[in-house]
Length: 459
Image (cartoon, rainbow, N blue to C red; front, side, top):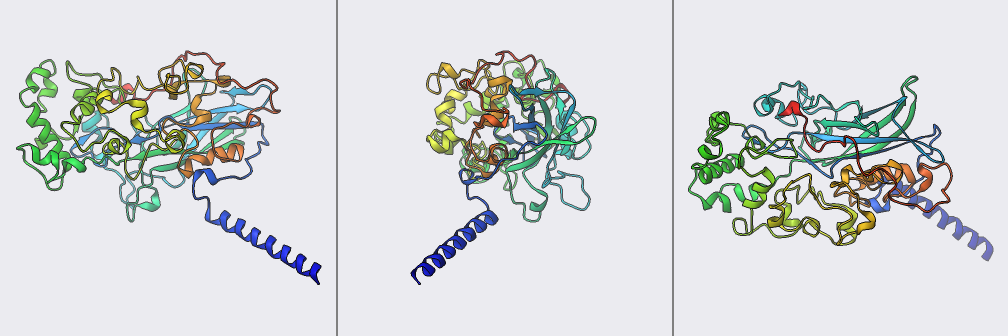
């Protein structure tokens, strides 16, 4: 009898465990670190690494008054043929991308537009585009291009929004969108490898925190205030502070001078980089006017904007944001680092001589040290082990694995069965290498690294 009871108890416990596992599988993981399944096994002998070039891409929620950034997302991929050693493949294959849950941005007569960018793109960027076509000609699905140096594939300038198709009923933001990448044999079109990659995107600029009617910046100056248009309030302040400077600063640009004052609706929409210059857009500065990053960070200093605290929460007043929380990497989640630990406070960022192109490096003395120096100024453009881009194994800036977001971990689970930076050698190697792993071993100079900014067509 005791044996029978023991057997029955064991059976019940086993069934209970199976039920728990089943429930967890249906409900899904609660965070990125809880994911763990068998990795996809490559029956074709190919593996695909993919990533977004930045940890977050921002775009304006409305383009009728002013514009800082267009909808412009970028995916990057490297195709690896398994072997000892593995080989980076750039010929005989194609790489395509789709966003299954985000198939349009505007122009669908049966559904609401997710952005009014295409209503104003001609005035802002001087080009006419069909809806859902971005500034580089890319859409929300298509082929990735082989890069000029032939080391990777890229789809640059995808006009992605933060709303999935299913979110337009209630306009629910979904900043960590997922793209499906597929490698095919160029001749047979047979699928060789697939991967799910995050394309982060957000409009969470919290300008209203200071510039909405009744807030600090809107009450500090004797300017006309709009109760409904925060961007109009920003331009009114700009005119108030610079009305006597326009003629001097724009003396060599009568075309821009003719578009002042900015608060005149006939001179809108205003592209901020048109005067200030911005490496993120590839726009040069005009005369002695500060570039956009220096001007923005310099003006929003502790004296002018005391509510902007010198930490990540302070940065989230402008960078997305208290809900998006674009800083989600292992450094912030596991080591309590915030924006200022790497970038310095807002007054230091305001003195960056080359914003977007001169940023903190892994090899800095206060970080990983010289042994992990990427040689190039930007992590996103640096390569390491076997010619693989750093972001191919570690993921994007501000999202370095293990990220807080479950979607960021999906590709690592598909590749190696668990979240975290790619560290299982047999993802690419047929057999575990006998030699000790080293990060470096690739040329320090890249012929034509992919760009952070827009091409000349947008200038």
